Image (cartoon, rainbow, N blue to C red; front, side):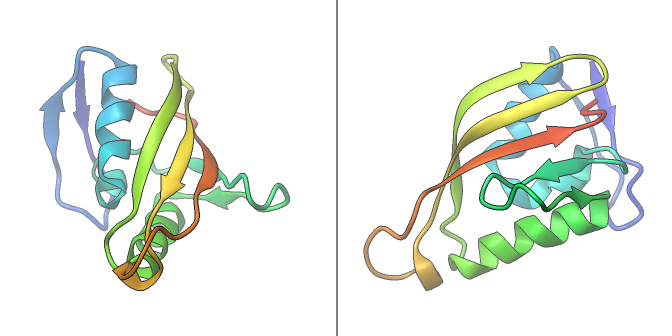
Length: 119
């Protein structure tokens, strides 16, 4: 499977993935590249705020960038579950990082992220 980004805020990227699960694992290994492959109508469901929906590629990447910046670039996601279908993908796990990127372990947040069209 090939994934090609058409997001206006990124350069076009083409990379081959065996399936949508592999694509999602690749994306969440480095959250800064979300907009390289996620669809324009991505929806993120932050577990820490069940009332909030983050909709659209620009808002989703801004959300991820804020998390990365808030941890001084130490943010990682320990993926615990991936469910990938042709039209919907879900990634669940724990986000870890250090506040400001320094000192000891910060705080872990469970995360569930859905993309209405991961590939």
